[in-house]
Length: 386
Ligand SMILES: Cc1ncc(COP(=O)(O)O)c(C=O)c1O
Image (cartoon, rainbow, N blue to C red):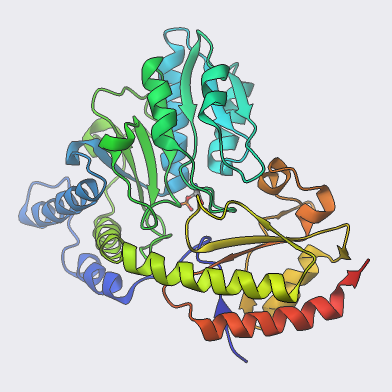
C-alpha cells in the first residue's frame, strides 16, 4: 500500500543533510560548551556559529537569539517571562487572539489563574486578526500583546507589522509565535519590529527538541529555568550543541529554497483544492486564499449537507496509508472540535468534520491523486449525504 504523509505542519522528517552535520557533534565534538578545555571550546564555537547563522537569517543580532527546547518553551518564556516582568510595574493585562496555539493560550490561562487579566480577540471568518481590534483592546495596564504570525491549522498570515506599529505607539511588549512562519514567509525582526519571537526546528526538517527565542536587546523577561549561567544567564541547562547545529543547517536550507519551494507547494495546493471542490461539493475551505502559507489546506465537511464523523474519516484515511491531521483533540474519550475552526465561526458538527492537509518537500502530485482517490472511497463509505 502507498504511504502518503500530508501532516508537515505537525512535524517534518529530518533532512538527511541535517542529520549528517549533526552526527559528529554526538560522537566527536561532545564537549560541554561551558567547559574551558578544548573539547568545550570547540563545542562552544559551533554553538555560537549556529546562533549567528540563525540570527542572521531573521536579521537579528546573535546576542538576541537564545536556544530553548522548542516552540512551546519559547512561547512559555515569552509570555510568562514578559507578563511577570510587566506585572512588577502594575501592567497585568495581556492581549492575545482566540486562535493561538495551545502553547500560548494555556500560558495565558495559567496567568489568569495567577491574577492576570487576558483579552482573547476574535478573528474574522478567514482567521485573520484586524489590527484595529488590538488597538481597541489596549488598556492603561496592558503589558504584553501576543499574536501568532502564521496559524498552524489554517495557514493564515497575520498582519504582524501593522500590529507591531500599534504596540510601538503604546510602548507595549509584542510577541509573535513564528513557529509556522519559518521557512515559509520572510522573517525580518527589524522590519517586523517585534520584541519577542518564537521558533522551532522540527517544522523545517530540523531535529525535534530545539527551538529559539528572539529577544530584542533591552527587553526584560523573568527567567523560567534557573540553574547554570548558560544562554547568557537567561536559560539554564547544558546547551544541546548537536541540535543547535542541526537547527542552523535546517534553517539555512529552508530559507535558501523558500521561493522555489513555496511556488511548487502553491501549485500543488491549487491543484488539490480545485480537485476537492470538483469532487466534493459539500466541502468548505477554511482560511484565506491570498494571505496564507502555501502548504496548508484546511477543509470542513459542511454538516448541513453531509453527515460524516471526523474521527472515523481520519482513521479510515490512515488505514489507506494517508496521514493527515484533524485539528481536534481527543480529551477523555471524546473528540473536542478545534478552537480555531470554532473561532472562525463554523458550527460544532462541521468543526468536528475538519481535516488539515499540509504538504512538504517530499509531496508530489501522485501523492495528491492517491489521496483524492482514497478520500472519494472513504467519504462514500462513511459519509451520509443529507
Ligand atoms: C504555531 C505553533 N506554536 C508552537 C508550537 C509548539 O512547538 P514545539 O512543537 O516545537 O514545541 C507549534 C507546534 O505545533 C505550533 O504550530
